[in-house]
Length: 182
View 1 (cartoon, one colour):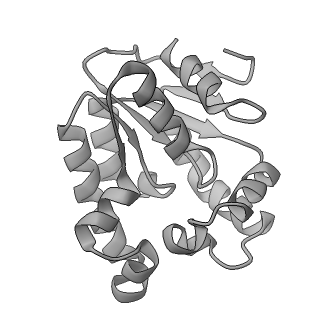
View 2 (cartoon, helix red, strand yellow):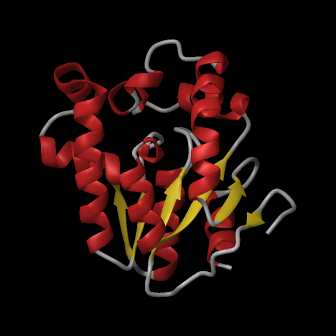
């Protein structure tokens, strides 16, 4: 743990999932895979689950059904992922926008909010080939202003939902996973 990591009041329960929340680029998927590898458990990436179930990319879902249509699929995918407990669940960056998701993950999971400075998120997203297909709200030339706008909207929701906050800056996925498991 570092000074940038903070615990919330709710205790960690071993029979629950670990749900990772945070903006795109914070490291939810890579850290989720690392936690699952360390504990020998299942990792479920909600965005990947949606893509498999829908048979099309998130960008295509947004184009055909809009953000509202995608969010409905997300609610169903999160509910399915939580039924597979104990598991490590990497949610999409906007999962906290729907109160049904927040209630579900809080009741069935220890919720970890992964953070990083806006500039670091931009750097990571620029170097991630999945951004166009998996992050339609950040596709194209999304820069610091777009990320700050999303953060301003979502930060209170992340804060309300989380049990633990971990800054992922300058830490390996293994270091972050071990901090979460401690």
